[in-house]
Length: 409
Image (cartoon, helix red, strand yellow):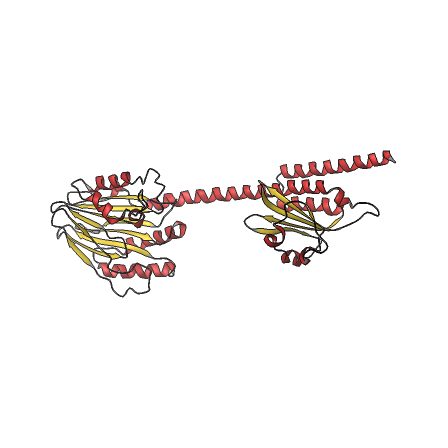
């Protein structure tokens, strides 16, 4: 009798070892989640005579990944967070427990890095004629097997997620390079005896919703603008690239600024369907008359500094933002006469709303201080960027920062 029991224990130990080895080999062979679950189900149902198996696993949210020996309706009735999350160790379902769990005998929680990863529910266990259920005898083995399988499945999910994130990262890097191509390079901007134009662009993420441009419209007229799409990220960047294409197609020396803004509003409404809008400052400068015409569509007020008289002027809002409403009821066009060497700095709210050391926004007044001197516009912008640590990893930076400056001679 003792010899028979010893032989039986040896066979059981061999079965367990072979099962664990087979599962480990399957994992090393990078078999699919479906195949791993199929092999797990075979061991429990065919070899251990377990009739019912449910597995709930957490990925992005809790989901049932295996239903065996019972209807899908049973699994849908169980709320993991409410019904299972409080189980920290193997638990036998009490006879007087909640109705939803009565189809099962045992709850096996699986943890990974001290956090609940899965719950295995087994039931409809075939009892031996005498003695203890074979499942109860092998409960530690079932727990070990469940841990190996479910951690492996989680690792598969994490690996796929890392691949997906890497693909997204590469796509964002490509999108960032393409978007940077829409922002004019400083060396291509007009720089002559009449005007000197320079800019700065720093997206908070890989892509952003800021944009500035400068377009020679003819021999004497120069157009420039700065814009900011509401929100951040890919959707803002897509709308901004669409806006850039429309602006360049529409902005000519002949079109009145008011008409240009109306048409841009129509295009943005059509593209964004009212979900996003754009704040915009747009201007046209005639180098002969030295008149600067402009429209400020809900954008931050650009600052003009007259270097001779040392006066500072703000070009404030003259209408609502582009894409806010189907038809802009009032568009007020402003003008400014350049009577002496002057500088203008246009910026997005990522700069003006940047908190200082005390948590207060630096505001337009601080920006104006960097402009109010005899240095050139490029030196002014470079000093502003340096003093605010924008390129040095300012941890208070929370938005895209864009600047375009023009010096008039």
